[in-house]
Image 1 (cartoon, rainbow, N blue to C red):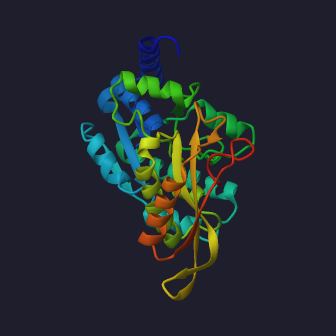
Image 2 (cartoon, rainbow, N blue to C red):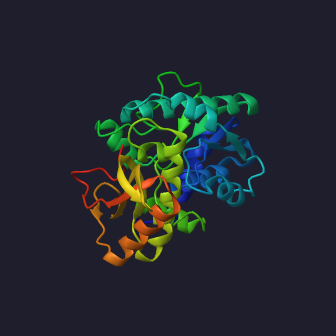
Length: 303
């Protein structure tokens, strides 16, 4: 991206032209992509925009509270509690692609409900170029692209960042002085793609707390993305007792745009501190492993 100021002016005009005199909602997750799209859309149409944050129950620790605080200046902010509905919809679903489609449909239905309430005809999303590449290339369906249902009850979907990579989006976010500009990427389907197999409240709790530990412990190592995933169960020992507990994988990668990534080389002391906290703070975790696989052959997320 050569001229960020010109890009911002162009996209503000683009959103304004697309929405016109109608109302719109913005799918707001709290990540850098949707936050940047929200800022551009708000500048373009002001009070015609309703930001909608859906608490899916699949979010990082403290995410909902942070979104409320960060976007409090937008008086029309809606926070939708859909935790039970998402978990019910995911019950029994084990295939990664099916998960993404289920989550994509649930998101759209929640947005449609709010849109009817505020008489909005347009949906603004923070879709970026890698989302489109991976969805269209059959690598994995992003919930906001390939994971969308066939029927979408909006006159149009507006995606001002659709042709930009993550590092370019950060440039725009910095130019807009957004607090979210340096946040680690977080998948749209949330912790659901960091839980292998069926998504349950128990696995989500483990993934959420373990990811919180990883992000805190690796803050000074400055990874592009770092998190924890729940793989399955294995035998372990807690005290003098045998346990059959969760296996948690820690992943930390370096990247520029997310299209390729290298597993980060972490020192042994750091890894031991992470495993000690994760197993010590959660009695249901039996062991912790570190993922050393680059992208490719792996993807950054697990599903």
